[in-house]
Length: 101
Image (cartoon, rainbow, N blue to C red; front, side, top):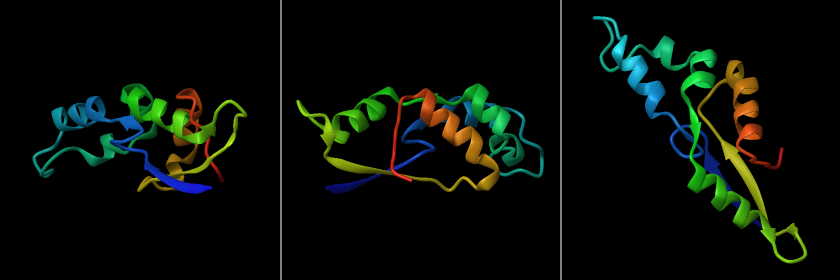
């Protein structure tokens, strides 16, 4: 079994709409974007979308057909913190991504 590692933001999840939204509402004191908006779990749910090509790649790498036995261990990494755990798990489930705990 081979370990295959995927990151969440920008790889599994397309965050371009969320980033654009956070940039649109940046304050004068913000250099790039309003990070409070960008890191808000509710905004993540509303604006992030699965990167379908990467999600399909995970499914293809996960199994050895035709037996459907696990071929590779999928490991998800993220710089998101604990307050994002629930939204992250929900996004992965919605995208059909299963992984090893």
